[in-house]
Length: 170
Image 1: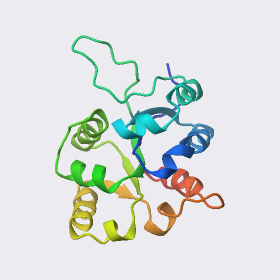
Image 2: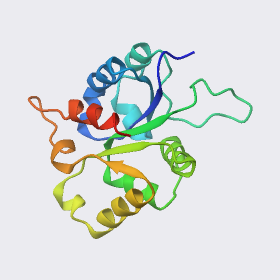
Image 3: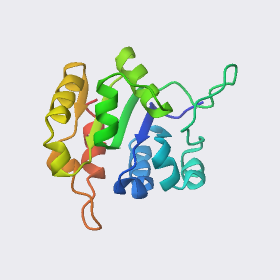
Image 4: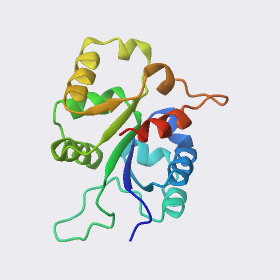
């Protein structure tokens, strides 16, 4: 049983993933029940045990076997933060080669409210495929956090507050 709306937080392998616990605290304070889904590489970077203790749910990054129960409640919304170049491009193409992408593709098909906070180098965000795929996701209902807010991650400025605020409108 959950206390609030359920949010699947998809975490990709980019440096901000190392501080995702801060984002989870803010989301939970805003009334979200947070379940973490990590890309395979992100799963090796983050402290899965600590995040599971923080959220009360296991961090998922591997597929369930047929017949195994899903340990996570049904999602009401999805947030991808940080959203990498690779994940965004694969998602827009409908590729489901890992659990995180499978969840994202299902969320798109179910029309779940979804927000992405892209985090990539300017050389990658300027790539024409990236721009087209962001546009494609937006045309299909995915909200995108403003680049100037979502790409500035350092010790003094993390866009977590602006991302949590953007989740209010999703």
